[in-house]
Amino acid sequence: MSGAGEGRPPILSMQDVEVVYDGIVLGLRSVSLTVSEGSIVALLGANGAGKSTTLKAASGLLSAERGEVRRGTVHYRGRPIAARTPSRLVRDGLVQVLEGRRCFPHLSVEENLATGAFAGRPSRPELARAVERVYERFPALRDKRRTAAGHLSGGEQQMLAIGRALVGRPSLVLLDEPSMGLAPKVVEEIFLLVRELHAREGVSFLLAEQNAAAALAMADSAYVLENGSVVASGSSADIRAREDVRGLYLGERAGRRARFRDRCRPADRAPERTEGPVQTRGVGAAASAAAD
Ligand code: ATP
Image (cartoon, rainbow, N blue to C red; front, side, top):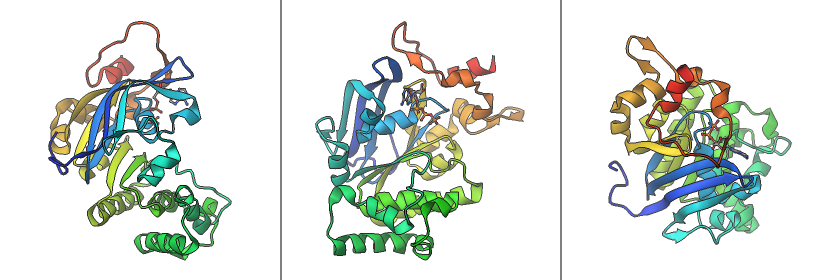
């Protein structure tokens, strides 16, 4: 795969990862991907494709949802993550920002930021310095440091969620659907912040997004997931140039505009069971089925 980060060592690599929830529901069939040091990698796909599950498999957070990696391997900085707890991984620099922003609504902005340092157990002065660094990056949060997080706008909550991850000085951030529910202009601002963090602080990102156009504009490379498997991968430019991806994920169709999301029926989200034959599908098979 080409793009920034090419030639650099992988910070994260997943090989043939299968994930099962509750011992029976298939979350991922087979996902292999690499995030090189200092790169931004986009993970694209429709609802239920397996984006969040991929991030949780990498951050060790699956067990909180009764999920497990049943096959395959995940390595962070060349070492398997299997033997490390999620808090150990946070201390080692791997942080996930969960979908839906997940701030503590009754805690102030500053208290929320402090929770981001929990795993590292910093001293008070260290914590104050870490929080100050976040305020330098996100001045809007400083202005609202005493405000309860539940009273922030959606965009501010997303900034807070990312800011909280930064308190621990991560090397790799797994960012789940940062654009969800936000106005296009706010999405632009959030993505600009991510790009700055990447450029100035060298943070690597694995970014799960349904907003493929915005994600590809920012990422060096991308993987497309369908039904728990990678069905396409390459540099962002290559992925953007692919007709099938353009039609299904970038809302472009010959003669008319189409959004993949609009074409999905709720049935596409139904969990699959692990028994039975595993189907191999190309890019768009799920969308075609939905359109039938
Ligand atoms: P979305 O964009 O809607 O968040 P996604 O691409 O992130 O979708 P996942 O949330 O990873 O997809 O879901 C992949 C599959 O795993 C789906 O079939 C989903 O129903 C199933 N799944 C996800 N979380 C759980 C869970 N906690 N328990 C059982 N099944 C789950």
